[in-house]
Length: 465
Image (cartoon, rainbow, N blue to C red; front, side):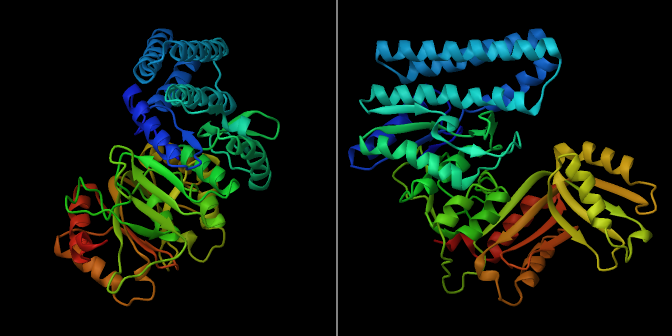
């Protein structure tokens, strides 16, 4: 069971999450708990690391006090036993002192490395897990608190987005956790955090606690991995955009990957891989409505009669870049040059389209990376013999239509674009992979919600089960 930051908002929420664990343990289940940082804490730690580097002392001190207040208040709300609460406060104070020392070092050096930043970010999970572990102890469960490093998750050294070395990790995790489970002890483990082969702390990217849960689930051959969140499961559309949107009760891994990457749930892009490879079902459940079944993600694609599309997702905060030039036509390596520049600038490309004339390449990136991407492309490629023009649009959004029923079904794209056209929405860019599980296209942001509602209606998604 993994509990995300959206669930762990404060001490009362930590207590509620702990009661869910206890209730399932009392029914005879063997539970492994994975804990994220409290809501907003990772962003705050990121902000603090930059303030330390830039020597913004007043802002840094204010955030440090806020960080202390958030966690002390949560511990007092969640833990009633005076002795256990005191232990928790001592642990938190120890973490806060260590964090302050690291930030002080960065302040004096004026330098922040990706390795240092990973270590700073790890404190969010460590403090939240310390509170939840002791809340479970307060509820009379036998527990042990472990970091991802201590449980044996070993990764490469790609700080900020480290990838687990699965064979070594599985061996370590099983060796560490099996004896605890046998003794009736509930392991409570930090999400997001791991270590490289030299023992240096790494993090597995934003949303990495989901990844931690599936890595541990696969290593332990768990019956299921449950991701507790604030939503009822994966939905046919964002209910804020389409009030009639429904929870999808069952979906395949391949469909869920398409939805997760495209914003249906802010899941780590690789989070489902370990469970998919080990054939372990993943269930997304609402911690505030634990009686609901949620969405079960399984290997097999389940197709009901007439069901073509399962969901329509909307991705905001993106930008569109188009590079063009007559010299690109018929010239090998053009696309490679563009993507090499962006890759070296650590910019992820979400979507790609190239005309058959080869005169231009369009790509979608996160809006926050637009300025960096344009600067990199202009410095490296603009005015070269390769590229003569670079244009961008930052008032766009991506819409994706997802469903295994689209594969081999004629006329799906026609229905998609007719439905959008009827609402007067212009399509700027289109991409579809050979898997046929996903049709993605770019529209102006002001038209995006109208397009989503049109597609939800076109494919009768309010009737999905």
